[in-house]
Length: 85
Image (cartoon, rainbow, N blue to C red; front, side, top):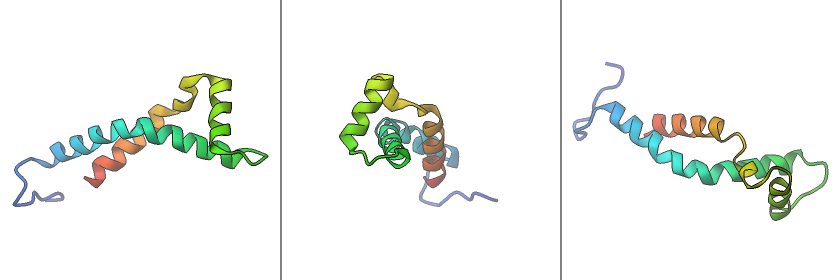
């Protein structure tokens, strides 16, 4: 058996995967804007502060601009957390 069930676990493995994936979804609403700002700071020609970078993103793309690429980030986070659990 590739994924043996532990003696102290009453639930099958897929329940733990679903819990890990679902638990990571709310966290993605915080980590997605943080990573977007970090990437924008690294790609900028001049040095940008965090608040300045966030203001620039919101001014250019609106408030939802901070959640750009949310779907890709959510898939990566959910898969990684589910596998970790």
